[in-house]
Length: 85
Image 1 (spheres, helix red, strand yellow):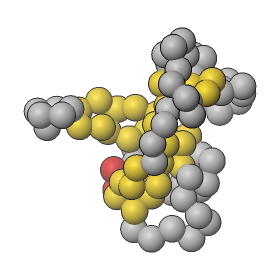
Image 2: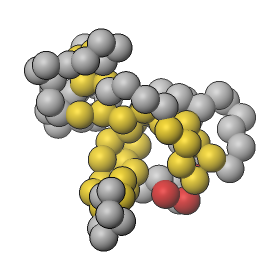
Image 3: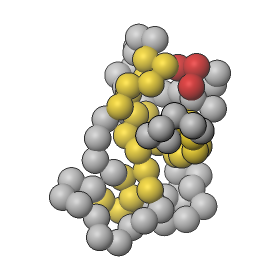
Image 4: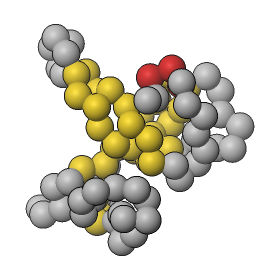
């Protein structure tokens, strides 16, 4: 488990809907400075076209350590700290 702070870009394994496997995806930590055992995250995507209301392209994706233009998706999720890679 890595330590993480608010605004960090971290990798999290998202399960497929049938739980047969999963895929590692980037997310942004949005937890307050002293989070409990769960970490609040917002998903990211490389699909920057056709964004829904509330989604937006990141301006400084390279500075965040991402390899391709990236957008912030809608939704806030709680994950256990141990799931952060």
